[in-house]
Length: 512
Image (tube, helix red, strand yellow):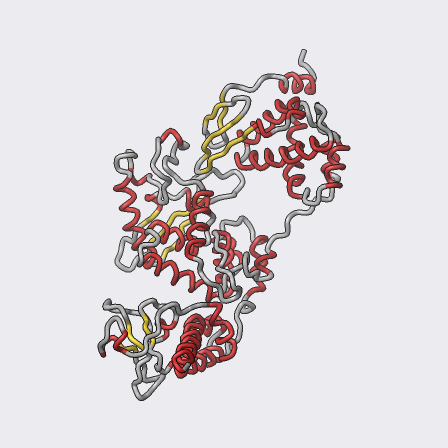
């Protein structure tokens, strides 16, 4: 005769944990009492049970059984999030009553909810976690607690606020900020302040809008080189945050420009050579590797891969050192991968891309999370005037070079290095000198004022005429095309205004 279901589940819940277990993706790890640590794909995860207060020790078996179910059947990161939320709740309850607790009660939930201002987020994660705990018949959480949390009015964190408000520290970057970041990266690389890996990592975040987890999963074999001279570079980007999808189980093919594809191809070859002695197949080497250590420290198939957190921190630390100026605030631009992602979506919306296409590129299953970008088209563009240019120039700091009194002070004091444009000044007056002996394919003089570090403007150059020319050209483009095309040289306008202001300061100092 079969035992009733409840009795069977109760007996099963009382069984001890096995010595080892496997994550949903197949990673085996040891189940000791005090800490579970393992590498799942590119992520390093740890569950330190000594963080649980002594008064909640009776709930440890139930907590571990529920966490184990999540690790085996869901993303291990979901288990980690629930674990952090439970530790938060246990500490809140222990601060009020440090007696031994055999179970969580509805009264405790309601009291913590009342006294804690920021309880929405942890209770949001604990709702489904406690439901599964109760379903597993593990001691510590009953159906009464599940019903209690289900009846709470839990507000989800609002999405899209930084984007909708064009927040200056968290929202999408302006075009001027975006171009300033590019100039800062190129300058830092030319001066060997950053390496090629950092440069390409930044440009992939900027050009693809990918999550750190996606770039952390990339391997050298994911870059597909063109088969013809005019073909495209393709990067196979792994999907992330999709229910039921394991890391590197599904890819999206993203086209790369040759300006990124060619150096990325050369870089991938360098990585292959570096890992030829560490991996049987160098094509499986990570595109952005961690420091080489023992292969046993990594999950199978992800040897030497950096974690998403490592790539995130690389970006943050890199830009903290560069201190890229903003055209909106006095502090350096706050830069991290999510801002690049928001900027990518904003720029795509302004280009008129359909939301379904943006959602596809962002690896979303629907358009709900990208709808906030629909109303941003043209709202981020401002009408430029001479006054606005002079007001914004000190903040934007588009020009960071040196102003010279005459050609005698130039790095290359000869006629061939002069910057002249008869559309601006028909007398052929020079705006300055170019300090580089390398052929330049950029559009003079616009690119010179847009932050070129080799541009050496003359103190008495026709900079006012250049500014008038660029402002007039902007007005023409506003009428003939659209806001986005018209704003393409805004950084150069600010750079020219800054040169004019600095020339005025120098002349004022010379006259004293």
